[in-house]
Image (cartoon, rainbow, N blue to C red; front, side):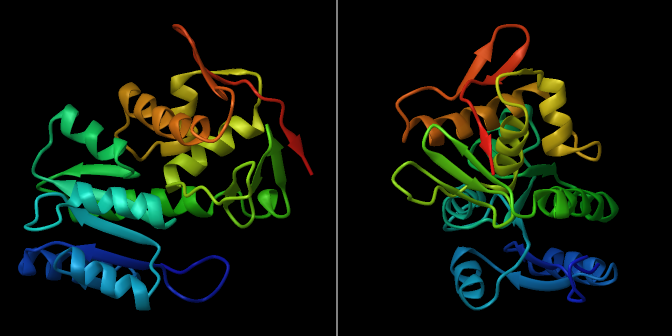
Length: 240
């Protein structure tokens, strides 16, 4: 599967301590046109990412040493790579924890390879979505600046605030519709798409993460909860 902006295939990194499973996933995704990389754990993942940028990391949760939750949190803070977590822990609370630490999607084992491809494509569409519509758009609000084309958010002190793919999609939804109440269903649709097994508490967790990042460097609460209705981005937004 190639990047619509060029000819190079999208790059996927699979991080799992199970050699056989890693190989199976790599071979299946290569058959769908992705450029594949492998890592057996956190150290291998970090070493590979230092020399090779990727678009999405498919990350196992239960690994010795640095587990998947720790690595997902690290990726959310340090990069814009998409993260899909895969785990034998499939309860709703496990999925919420995965999403809270910064993952963009969460799949329970055993994973259907076809479903994994679908989730990867859906996440890539969200990452690349907007294309020309976003080009050159600068959003300014409460001293913050968000460059939609470069996908860079700067706080009032001009410090870059890292966002996960899902957090960026959520912020974009708010910035394009400021001072309007947005329902949870709408936010789920624009940030996760029809291909994702989404649920209300997932969007609540994602809103909470984004709110903390914004509130920590702002004097006002920019994202406010409207009881029984959804959320509203309270600040005035200027688009240039």
